[in-house]
Amino acid sequence: MQEEFGDEIAVLFVEVQGADRAKMQKFALEKKWFGGDSMWTRERPFSTGMNGIPNFALLDAQGKVALSGYSNSMHSQIKDTLSELVKNSEKAPSHYSSSVTKAWKESSRGNYAKAITLAKKVMQKAAEKDNADDVESAKEVLNLALGKADSRISQVRWLLDHGYAEKGKQLLVPLTKACKGVADLSASCSELADWLKSSSGKEELSASRGLQRLEGKLFEDPKGSHRKGLLAFVEKNAGTLAASRASALAKICQ
Amino acid sequence: MLGAVIIMKKTLLPLVLFGALLTTSASAQIEVGQEMSFTFQNSPVNSYGVQSLDDLRGRPVFVEFWGTR
Image 1 (spheres, one colour):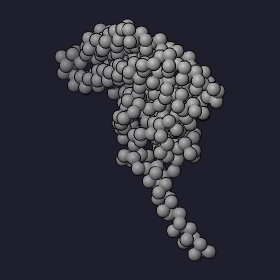
Image 2 (cartoon, rainbow over the protein chains, first blue to last red; image 1 turned 120 degrees about the vertical axis):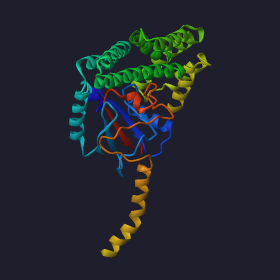
Image 3 (cartoon, each protein chain N blue to C red; image 1 turned 90 degrees about the vertical axis):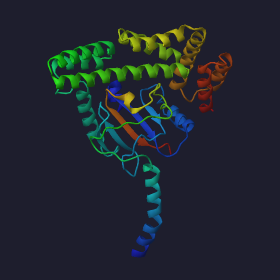
Image 4 (cartoon, rainbow over the protein chains, first blue to last red; image 1 turned 60 degrees about the horizontal axis):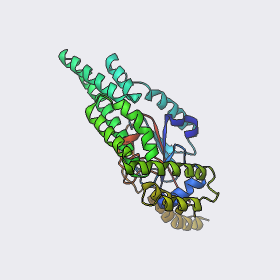
């Protein structure tokens, strides 16, 4: 599914047979799923009500259930529904006015500050004209853009806290640009950028780059002998978050 | 023949029920149109910091329930 739709969709696998995290990671590593866009978890976000596996649910871009059932017997229905959902995810809700749609488009392009500024302007103008519908729609877009920006900032913070400093930096650069002009968001981005410039940040950046290289080889050839290299990395970068991550990877390479 | 069916039912029913419990013991069941929200205790593997279903909004999400066995 991910191969067909690329990053137009997100794919989340939920392991429901009680495998621990290490077993699940080992399984995914052997299948060469690491490094791709799919995600795996053992936490069930909900139940589809199906008794057998694999079963699935499709959520639309707003997080609403569009379809559910057994994966093996509904392949073409899943594909058709996903194509439709992808198309719809690129369209603003039909009841939005053109000015609200403009703000919505900026938000969906990741231009959060622009979306926020536009939505606020629409809210103000619509309020002056007693246009309650536009006020409400613009408020929705404002909250959407703020929520997305917050979510991205949290994601970067998570990456920096978990040994993915390089990946975090790659996301932070465009995010800082996208948030420029909104004080709270810009302050959060600056705080993260400052940490990356600190001595610990620099150390983590260098370590995470090194680990990325090792991961590339491991994900490409999971059956090769990578454990020694990972353990040497752990020793060389002892005390870093990237080293903790490498140590966990070495365990699943056993 | 009927006896064998009854015996099979008696043997298989607990297994089927156990299997159902294994795969459906999570939170409430879903309905089409229902808005889903969930916060993960641990960020999913390979997600680079996704912390909730809300973080995935903006594009469709295919959620598959599967097993490693």
